[in-house]
Image (tube, rainbow, N blue to C red; front, side, top):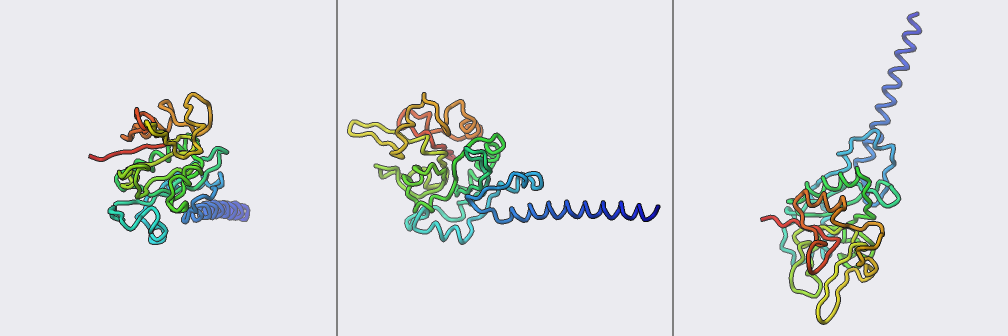
Length: 243
């Protein structure tokens, strides 16, 4: 009977080793998450969720990418004040997609916690790539419905710095949640392709409202929503101004 026991022990050890290998394989695959890539669903059976929601000092490769784009020559925000976030989000098809964002260190934990809750509730975010891949052109990024954070820039049509310049603001699904301002001289819509989505009574995907989960999570973390402003209306925009 001893040989039977040996076989059973051997099979048990092989099973344990196999499970350990599988766990290591999926854990190792998350060591270098590639923004824009899709994570296989079975990965979540073997890897803890917090591994997909990380805050880093800005790596040299990322800071080099930002130079002359989101981090312009006249930028006065120290690199050390900014953090590089890597997280996952659901797209409209339900896929788990790797996203990235640069924000001020003061809101980095807030954003990571919000993104994790949005993911767990399958809230759709189409994409979240650094705005530097769009040459830091806000209009181009918004037209692609790209969610983003830090970008040293002025508010269009003004000489006032945007709160994105300090990294204390983020835009979520901007194409479907446009910026709108009306003056005696003109109307400003950003992105311009977002005009069909100014009708907030219409039903369409990615729309942020006061009853929306996205709004609720940001509000719980102390952010102000641009959609609640009287003028301008900035439905994509959430900011947290530290006192």
